[in-house]
Image (tube, rainbow, N blue to C red; front, top):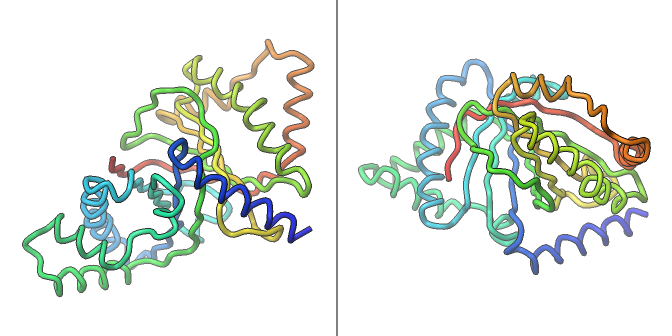
Length: 263
């Protein structure tokens, strides 16, 4: 079974190379910062924002987000989430090299020497620990014009498709749940929704296989969406929802606020 799951993941990932122009590839980094390092880390965040802006301007990456975490599996495990957006899986896996970071830091602050930049990076990386990194591919999303700006709220839901129901789960998200989210967006109860498939790690022992990004303009919209009940849904639709829920295990839900975004 492990071999078959690995083969499925690898096949889907390689197929994504062909369809790269129709998708986005995202790297999530879950970051832990000790209280004593918080001030230095915030300074690092401001520095990296400029570096990533240079990388966007150079078309090396598509964007970068910095999120502060409010709730999740264990908020002591990490407090921040960053997302780096790439145009294809090869760029995603290569990431930004040390040479890239040096180049873009130099573009962001031409007055700094190479040694000063390297010292700045050494000091910056010492302020935090990378608790987890996830490589993901966007495979479905709602039609919307949501404005990603500082202060928006997101619910990152980590899912694991039930064994033997990988395709059933993806079909349920696209055919059952996405129309529900689209309806909420049209009613002003949600901003945006995206389904992502995990590219790495592979195998049946992976903690999660998918992630959904649920965007809200603020807490008011978020709580209104939580309280909304679709009284017009049919028995057939409710049965489809129930079947879809059984195709996956919702591992954790992380609620976060967007602190910075670079596009």
